[in-house]
Length: 84
Image 1 (cartoon, rainbow, N blue to C red):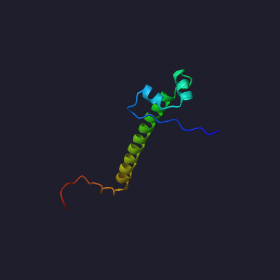
Image 2 (image 1 turned 120 degrees about the horizontal axis):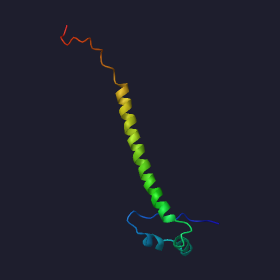
Image 3 (image 1 turned 90 degrees about the vertical axis):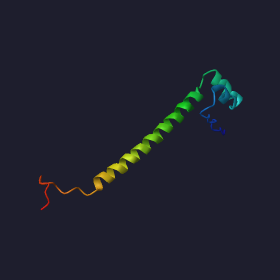
């Protein structure tokens, strides 16, 4: 038996609009709340966006740390600011 992947709701789509895109049997199950797919898919999409943002932030932090730690360390100061 081949099952198709449920349609992915667009961010601006209301629940009733999303339900109208589903096959009849899925609409009935969703209306009976046997399987709250809409909320699960919305939550999953939100989590995927947050994970992507976190990965991007982590990549920026990693680049910053590499640049910071790979730069040559400044010469130690002797406390004397006058040139010799």
